[in-house]
Length: 171
Image 1: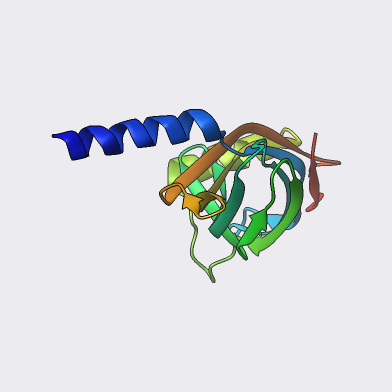
Image 2 (image 1 turned 180 degrees about the vertical axis):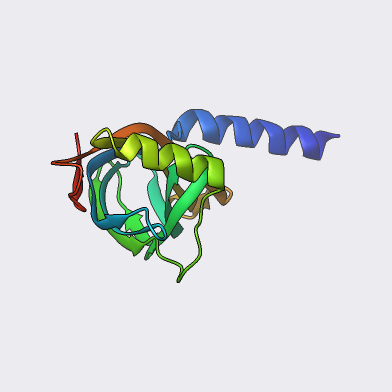
């Protein structure tokens, strides 16, 4: 019982001393080129995300960095970036690019695809970005457990200059 109490108190003291905070994600730019919905869904997605480590004492380690582009409940593209280390009170811009073309297969269900085509005809489409990575925070030889962190950026409105344009940028 004393050993468990010791580990609990040690963990509590470390948590209070280090005060770990989650990283802060901001979408800097979000663009699509060669975006088509017929005959199949296709596009080249370019995303720039700024990530801040607000911790004074903990270095953040990111691995398995993944960015999903979603429309409603369907994932349109899955993009990956290499892992990286973010020092204390530091920030980094991460550029992620990827395709949403899987040959001749539509990635969205028919009703979701119909909604996308309808919204695209208005000149803009609202997407969601899901950023996930496996993170660990370290201070010297002390480290936190490794956990997956998911940041969801909703309401990213991509505007197309005219109805025939295949290039759109975040509003």
